[in-house]
Length: 270
Image (tube, one colour):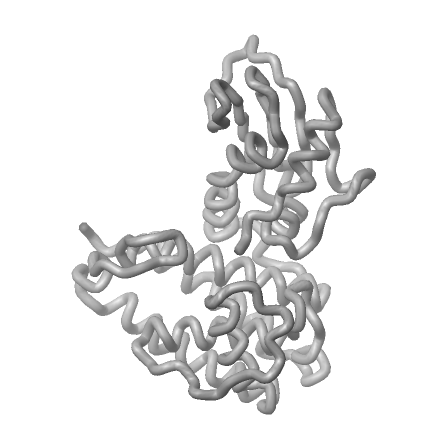
C-alpha cells in the first residue's frame, strides 16, 4: 500500500478551511449554537480537537460532564466529556489548541511510513485500517466545518474534493434509505439529483426485497425523482435538519408519496 496522499490532502484542506473560518471569530461567535443539540461553534471545534488528540495517542480527559441529556450512544458520551472539559475556556483558547494538534497531525500524516496507514484498527463502521479510517475522518471534519459555517452564516468550502468525498460516502446509505425506510416497492427505480454546488445523480432500484445503486440506460423508467442541492442533502443526511412535506428545497416528481417517505428517513448519521 502507498501513502493515501489524496485523503491526506483532502483532510488537511478541510483543516486549512477551518483555520480560515475560525481565525477572526469573536467570543460571541464562538458561543453561537449549531444544529447539533447542545453544541456551540466552540464545542464543535472541541470535538475535532479531541478526535485528533486521540488519534495522536493522547489520553482522554478524566473529566465527566454532568449533563448527558443529548447523548445517544457511547461514542456520544465520550465526545460530551471531552467537549464539556473545554467549555470553561474561551473560543480563542480552544482554537489555539486546535492549531497545535492539527500541526502535529499534519506532520505525522505527511512524514510517517506506510505501515502507519496499514495498521489494523476499529473504525466507526467496523474493523479496518487507519487508511480506511481516514475516509471517515475527511467526511467528519468537513461535515463539522459545515455545521459551524451554517451556524455563523459564513458559507464556504461547499464544493471541492472533500465535499465530493463526503457526498459519496452518504450515497452508500441510499439503498437502505430507499428500500428499508422508504419501502420502495419491488421494481421501483428512484432517481436522486443533487444539483449543486456538488452535482451528482444516483439511481437506486429495488428487486427481490433489496435496493441497490444501478447504472441506467436511456429507456430506464423512474418511479420517483428527487432533486435537491448538496447543502440540503448534507444537512438532511446528517440529521442537522429534517424534511417536512412542502419543503421548497426538495423537488419530488412521480410517486410523491414514495419520495416523501424516502426524505423523511434521510438521516444516516449516528
